[in-house]
Amino acid sequence: MSQTPRTSTVISCTLLVVALTAGATACSSEGSPLSAAPYDAADQISFNGPSGHGKKADPDKPLEVTAEDDDGRITDVTARDATGRHVAGELSADGTRWHSTSPLAASAHYTVRVSTEDEDGAPGRKVLAFDTGKPLTKKRLKVTFGPKAGTYGVGQPITAELSKPVKDKAQRAIVERALKVDSMPAVEGAWHWVDDKELHYRPKEYWPSKATIQVRSNLDGIKISDRLWGGKVKPLKLTTGDRVIAVTDASSHSMTVYKNGKAINDIPVTTGKPGFETRNGVKVVLGKEYFVRMRGTSIGISEGSSESYDLPVYYATRVTWSGEYVHAAPWSVGSQGYANVSHGCTGMSTGNAEWFFDNVREGDVVKVVNSDGDTMETFGNGFGDWNLGWKKWRKGSALVGGSPDGPRPEEKARLRPESV
Image 1 (cartoon, rainbow, N blue to C red):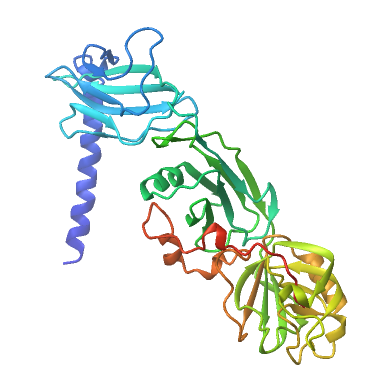
Image 2: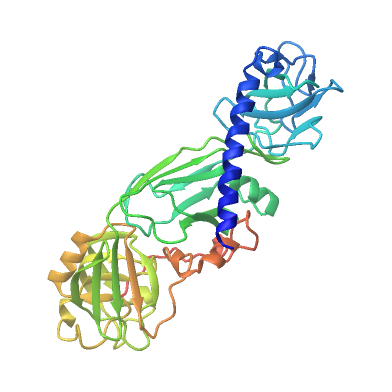
């Protein structure tokens, strides 16, 4: 019973090859209309572009191509502007009409290639070209990508700062669709609206090591609303270094540093004591400072309190804007590996802190587990982006659905106090 379908399948495939071969021979015969060069289909189609020298199309109106000949039909339409941006469109089932479904850009030059066939199946071709006019408003949405060009760790999110707020979901979809992120090797990723003026992009997992990431915008000249059009945006190119992930276990008072999946160092540490517990979860290295003066007043400890401090700190690797670091803490060496005595930072010996400082870069991952502290904030205090599950992350996309999870701009904590 199981052999019969296999035999039948092989025979069917053989017959299909023969049929295709025969078809190819017939098409190449002199008597077939398909063997002729495509005819000029100018009399067979019409479009709603500008007529007359120097006239320009209204970018607010969709592009339409229509078959004028009752015995012919449109088989394909491609439309692109001079920068290579493709215009999406729909072709009716009967081939009589094609219309654009994505907006045209203002002040752009378009080339439209239309393919047709007549009642005998002979192919026709027509190339149309036109320019679009300027937008009526001068208000342009500018986008600034971040971080600056360079090499980063595999945890570095991409940021997009907008010059004007965009609140409407449909308008957000236009903006988001135009913001392109390409990586080599390719990975699955998505934008997430932090608030009305900021988006973050991250992959489902961390970036691959040694990856190249290209970020660009296709917003220039695109209508976002009646009073807002997209402006020119400077592209961004990033690369990633090795996959460096530091895991701090607050319960065992140790940090293990992994490089490309292999443990390269185990470091005794101390983390936040009761009342000052270190945040759990994934954080991303924000920067490195050889020297920082840390004061208890910066985290709300009053002068004269038994918890008060004012210390010079070296080899400080920042992981939150509110002042959490991985740094040298020579005053607590006796507790490192045994007890948590800090005010929230991860402390280690000066030698270990110098090694850590020299072996991590901005964008590397620092993960804390088994602390009694809260989980790192997703937004507003650094990059806690990875603490949001992938399904919830995608809900922050205007192209997927849902609402942003982040704080409003005025709610963001951009202070830079320090804790030890």
